[in-house]
Structure formats: structure tokens, C-alpha cells
Length: 415
Ligand SMILES: [Fe+2]
Ligand SMILES: [Fe+2]
Ligand SMILES: [Fe+2]
Ligand SMILES: [Fe+2]
Image (cartoon, rainbow, N blue to C red; front, side, top):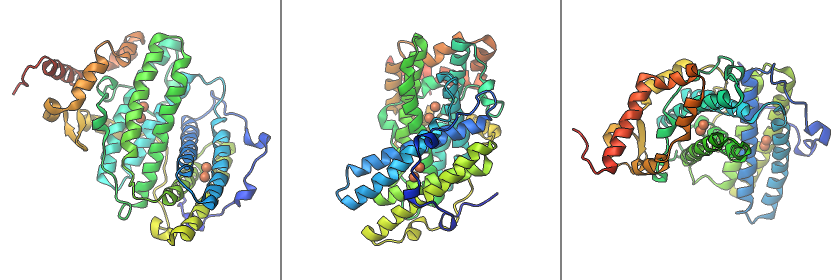
């Protein structure tokens, strides 16, 4: 497969990147014919563009230099146009819950791909940890799809991603203290780690925003509650992932890395895209991003006296980010890590920390009037509902419930 070499790539001058209204909005894909992974690429690239725009806005408000602000406004405007082009590829007849299944398929197969290729063990562990939570969301939303629309999740995931419980959503709820994570060191971290970090933060942030901007659009009470419950887990994911980044990176450095990440992911998408029309979009947008990256590199040189090559420290970023089935990998993580629980910035076995875990009380409070992600299973057809009875899943849920009840009743833990 081709290699991503950001310093050797063609680019398009930024002033040539403005599109007219008719170029900006392109025809949507056909939801009946689209490949599942074309849909996931559209969802991911929309999230990456949105992250780029939001980060640029945050930085603009903390920057006083007029030249930096002007350049950031220019780049941001193009990223904003790109986001509209990408997000408008989603067709109007794709329902909210169908798009939602696409979001969780992104979360599963993107996270698995990043984790498999992540050089930093702590960052990899953090990816694995949340991977099997998003995997569970895909199952809960598949139950909702069946209940609300009589829909078959296979029409969305197309057999590429399994649908069954992971770490049950009902036990994913934790006290904010337990979303704290350590960050990588900007001077020693591999560029792949920095790219993975920006990619997963963008994906999770977009997922949270999508659930929060659509969950209230249902009149069904359970659907409204399920979106709210899972949106809150995504807030935890955005927090844990966001904290992996080194806060000592300068704002210009963060901007340059974000633009590099956009280029890297567009380039990755272009190499694997099966729809030639959409591949053309990925290819041209990758060239645009190289100019954004170069513009940020020039700012770093001018204002910080640093060479961007001393920050990137690589000519090639590899491997590319690829959407493909990860069934064996996901099953192995479920098998080995179902009961992991974050405590004091480390991942521990539930049974070892239950007695001192601040999340127990939090979870008890949140779940005590009923849990939408459990209730939705009983509304789904029996074959789908039955999957929640898998022995390992049931055992873990029961263990958490038992320990929680004991602790809340002040009973000592069994030896
Ligand atoms: Fe962009
Ligand atoms: Fe999720
Ligand atoms: Fe997530
Ligand atoms: Fe950009």
C-alpha cells in the first residue's frame, strides 16, 4: 500500500481552495448500495473536520497576535467548507438510528485499528478499554433499531462488525475522578501516537455531539433515555482520550499536528475507498490539508523559531488507518479485559478495587431507577435479546451488582 509522506506530497494553494455553493454540496451516497466502510469513512472525516474547526476556534480565543488569528481564520474556513461537503454525503433517508449504528461501527473498527498499531502501551490500553464499551453501544442501539423501526443491524454493518454485548453499558458509568488519565510526553512520543490521539478524540467528540443533537428528536421515551445514557459514556470517552495529549505542546504545535492528522486520515481513506467518486473527494482534500499543515509549519518557524521536522521527527507516518473487520481482536479484548476498571489513572481488575472505588456509589446513584441500556434489550426480538445472556457478561454484571449492594448496605466484602 502507498505510504503517507507529508513532506513529499502535492498540495493545493489555500486561496484556490474556496468552492462555490454547488461544488460545496455534493450528491449523497445511496444508502442501499453504500459499502459499510464508505459510510464509516464519511462519519470519521466529518468528525475530524469538526474537531479541527472546534480546536481552531478555542485557540483563536486565546491568541492575541493578529497575523496568527488571520491565518487560522483562513484555514478554519476551508476546514469548515470541507466538513459540510463530507457531512452532506449522508443521505436524507438514512434514519438517525441507522446513522447511529454507523457511528458505533466507526468507534469499534477505528479504535481496534488504532489500538493494534499504537506504539505507546498506556495509550493502547486506553483504546482497548473504551473499544469494548463502544462495541456494547453498537449492540444496545441495534436493539433500539429493531424495536423502533423493525430494522436489521446487518443492513448497516454488513457482516463486517459483530453485534453482541461487550462491557455492558450499565457498568460503564463512573465517577468523573475515574476518567483521569496520564498524558504522553510530546518530546518522546511517536508521531503515530499523536495522530492516533487526535483521531480518536475527534471521533469520540463527534459521536457525543451527534447523540446530544439527535437524541431528543425521538418521541419514544426509551429512545430519548438511551441516547442520553450513551451520550454520557461518550463524554467520559472524550475526557479520557483528551487527557492523553501533552498539555505542553504549544497552540501552534497542536494546530500543525491537527492539520497533519487531517491529511493523514484523508490520505488513508483515499487508499482504501471503493467508491471512485468519494475517493476523488478524499484525494483532493488530502492535498488541501498539506497546505494547511505547511501554513502552520510556517507560523511555528516564524513565531517559535522551530522547524516542523523537529516536531514530526519522521518522513513517513505508518501504517495507514484502515477500516476492516477486527472480530478476533475485539473478542480477545472482551475475553481479557471485560472487568478492567480505571482507578488512579491505572487499569485494575474490578474485584481488586471495588471496595475503594468512587465509581461504585456514582453508578448506584445513576442506575437505581432503571437503566435504559438494559431495558432496550427486552424490547428487541428474542434472538437479539438472547445475546445479553452470554455467561461471561451475565457473571460480570451480577458481580458488580452484588458488590454494589453490599457496599451500599455497609456489608464487608467477602474474602
Ligand atoms: Fe480539513
Ligand atoms: Fe459509543
Ligand atoms: Fe465512545
Ligand atoms: Fe485542514
